[in-house]
Image (tube, rainbow, N blue to C red; front, side, top):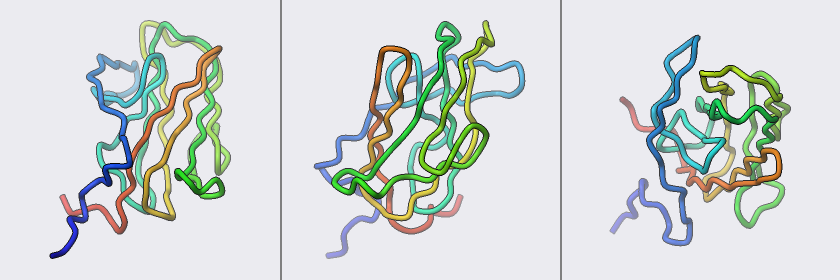
Length: 143
């Protein structure tokens, strides 16, 4: 019997998605996210090793800065690599600001060198939330 490559281990409690009414004055933003207000991860609903597009969406009512970091559970030195504006390889710092009535967002890439369960920490003024995702081995399926 071959293991299902899309099966998430029962020990990885991934964060459930929520529907969002995210709007931007520049582009159309995804209508879903993972996390708790005011910051959400979006851009993919399945994650794989290598580079993939990612969005962090910030509710219009929140005007403070956001710090994003992450790591593979059980491997403190294995973390995603972020590339895009306001990022260094292991962190994203989204500056404070306002785009009301629109959502602010970070649009870039996350890259994973190892499959497994990752925790992304989304820090905002006075609050830290975590989003847990599972990164599958190999490349994403076609389509």
